Image (cartoon, rainbow, N blue to C red):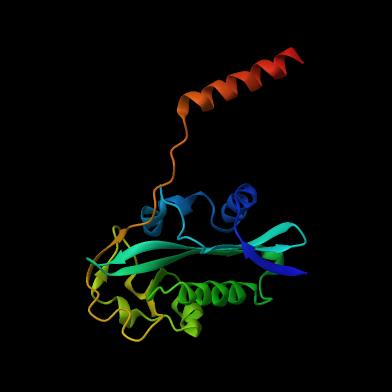
Amino acid sequence: MIRIVPETSAHLEAREALLDACFGPSRFAKTSERLREGRLPAKGLAFTAVDDNRLIGTLRLWNISAGPGRPALLLGPLAVDGQYRSEGLGARLMWHGIGYAQEYGHKAILLVGDAPYYSRFGFSTDLTERLWLPGPVERNRFLGLELVPDGLVGAAGLVNATGELETAPDFAALVARAANEATFRFAA
């Protein structure tokens, strides 16, 4: 049975493997990644789809500003395991994320993606005409959705990341752990 659940740290490795399989290493070069890197997803807005205990889908939303002083969310990436595509799981994840974003009081969502796919959820290029991203993007793929009436009215300027910063790993601790693991392997 497929369930959509909040993402936990136990999902991260499988999530990264799914994203690698769906998008490859070029995913790190995308403009939207500039708004995500070094940040945590918006509180309560990171989801995984699981079949039994196997991660088969992911969706995250991120805190951004849609121009100065205009809080919004950035959606992405949305990914579904190839074996489960064309079963409506991507749409289920989208509606799930949009619903929770509304419930938590957010006013708007931006994304970069395929307009024919995302238009069925209400996304449009009309809402992003006066906004720009911190890197190259095809304008016909830069879309917005208002979660409340006029949620993006007057939004203009550069989209910026505003989310909570990730805690950087302790590099010395990582090196020490790797050294201990290597010593353990050679001793065994």
